[in-house]
Image (spheres, rainbow, N blue to C red):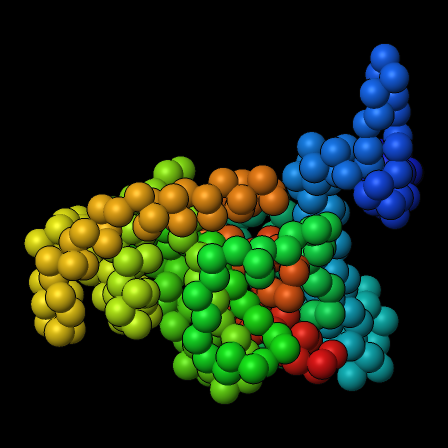
Amino acid sequence: MKLSSLLILLILLSACSCRNDEVIAEVNGRKIYNSELSQVTKQEIFDFLNRTYEIKMRSLDDLVKRKLIEYEASKQNLSVDDFLNIYVCRAMQDSAMAGVADMPAKKLRGRLIQRLVDSLFYEAQITRYIYPPKMPSCVITDLNIRYRGNLDAKTYLIVASDFDCQRCGEFEKTLKRIYNEYKSKVKLGFVNFADEPTFASLACEAADKYGKFWEFHDALFSYAAPLDSVYVYGLAKNMGMDVAAYKQDILSAETYNSVNRTINKLMERGLFATPTIIINNRLVYITNSYEELTRLLNQELQNE
């Protein structure tokens, strides 16, 4: 199974190395190009690479746990087997284990060792250097992205998000932490992404004409109740905007087409869910982890 997976991965990687303008087939005299194949297979390839990444992460954690036991044994100049035998014997006498005295010996031994391993693992300071895969050709910087933070920074983080998505709203807390910590070092971007243009996305897009995009962005994500026009127009009034003109901007074909065009382009380039994070053309697999995202940002900053 492992060999077959490796072979598949090598085939996929070798396929990705072809030029986009290379002809890979002809049908009745009409050419099919590698770029077309890449477009229809990139999500499946990306999913495969992500599964490989998950396997490596699980295996790394298992390896770390084994090493922690070896380190503890070496501190006492014991073999791993002797160290575990002594630990289990002592733990058996622990009053905390009184409730499991009748458990079969083999099962009890396994539980005790697992308790030790978990304790060592969660107390250890672990830095992992395995990163999620990069998705090929995931470039969206030419689209309708709004940025804040350090606008001159080489490293950027873009979130494709939806104001009406509950998970996106919860994820904003993580993004706010990242913004507060990295705003002087990183360019942070936002792009509207939903099944179709929503009232919230149109309202935020129209607000950009008044220089109020990020004020609306933050206010819309912070609003706990279902979003309605009363709240949006109230925001505009409180910000000193011309509400009548702003209403026309929200309803204009220009605003709708701008948001809709971006949504279609994002889907063409392989985005399919919200929130989606992109760091320097890297489509991030684990998008809800502050630790993962900041680790990737730090890696990119070090490579500048």
